[in-house]
Image (tube, rainbow, N blue to C red; front, top):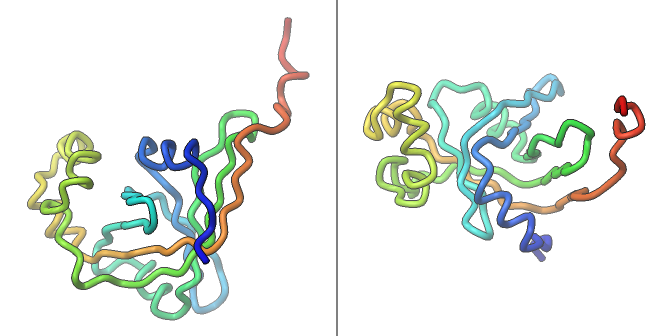
Length: 148
């Protein structure tokens, strides 16, 4: 049974541009990598360069974690454990309307075209969430440290 994703978290997943994908190397060392992603309501989609270490790591161990940055006080924490797989049937990035809507401006900012992006980041990774840890509101650890 897939984990429950709140409406608030789903909105954040659609809005955020970067998520950290943590894979595990064969020697057991975690390898966090910031990536662009698309959340469709059920599955995460990430495009990767074919030579990226994360692909070897996923081939060795498909268990991964995704997390969003917290706010400056450690609130807004989101950690999603999941199973990653390569999706050879996924459309290239430049033919994925949702991905292009979200990242067209970012692609231009890194001086690429949609076509060059799709060519360089040609491997699609799907991550199916298994568990979600979501601490949207919590202690504002630093609020007592602020100067009046």
